Length: 402
View 1 (cartoon, one colour):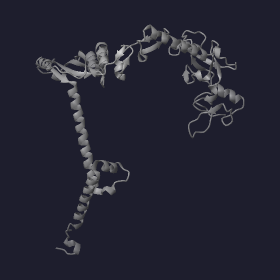
View 2 (tube, one colour):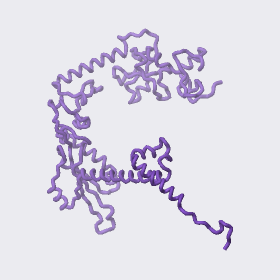
View 3 (cartoon, helix red, strand yellow):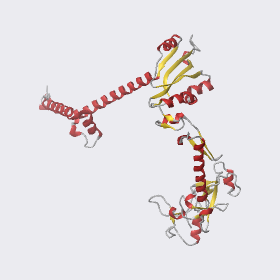
View 4 (cartoon, one colour):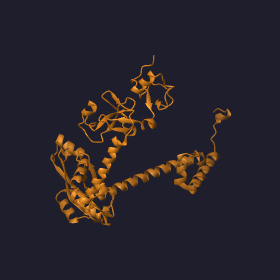
């Protein structure tokens, strides 16, 4: 009696066991999948035997509507509604080449599931494979039709199409153009633009914008200034992380303002959440969206805003200060690491460091031969002084008592 398994045997295994095969003796077109170094047993995760992929991919299958296909076209990795939709259970699936989601011939479970509505089960058949009545043939015709429509789509638009912005709608079976200049900016497109119909401007810049925020000062609760709302403007924020052709920048400045709002809304998600659900007033506004080669500043406008009680911050200044603070932190950390390493050299010497250790590599890289030699000299001098230091003797050492 076999040991109870967490998974029932698949149909392939049941058939081979009835024919007298075992885990040690079986046809060459099947295998027993077990974890490495585990005992070879049919009580495994896969439910017993599994087809060798080189064999099953060449077998012929048939759909409920009579189409044939090779096993290579099938999917065999799904478990749904208590059924393992696999080759081994003769329940592999295939995406319907006709794109029919309301077919009544396929299994009822596949008809009911929204994500599987284009799938149908296939069963292995001994019928001779005919390419003209196969899924592969229909897919070839389908791909040819898609390419033909793609060429026709480009001709209708007089070549003003871009591969990066085109997609084939499988519901309408037509090509669509969804032009988004922001994607061009992310890719850093240059050269000839088929949509604009001319070479992109070689001058590079960015899309700059200002963010005005207003928030309630909760730290002033219980004081004379309770309920005060502060306003600040962060000026010169960038849409792209890198310079982009000015042609793309100008288009994005007109068409990508909703994307900018979404980006800022995501940045202030926490503040907006507390404003909506806890009454902590917070709001933001996008201002002065413009395309420029470099950030420009309006000093008079800044002074006017400051006089009106608005706090002005330039994003480039903030990032520059953050970069300087980061460099300073790294410098201090490096100096501390060098001091620790020098103490080790003074205590144990260079030869006291393990040959392939990080300390020895850092000593070679950070200190250099001259500094290492200087520290070695200091260590030897210190050891010599320790050895020559006079030792104070006690009278008790000579057996004398006072």
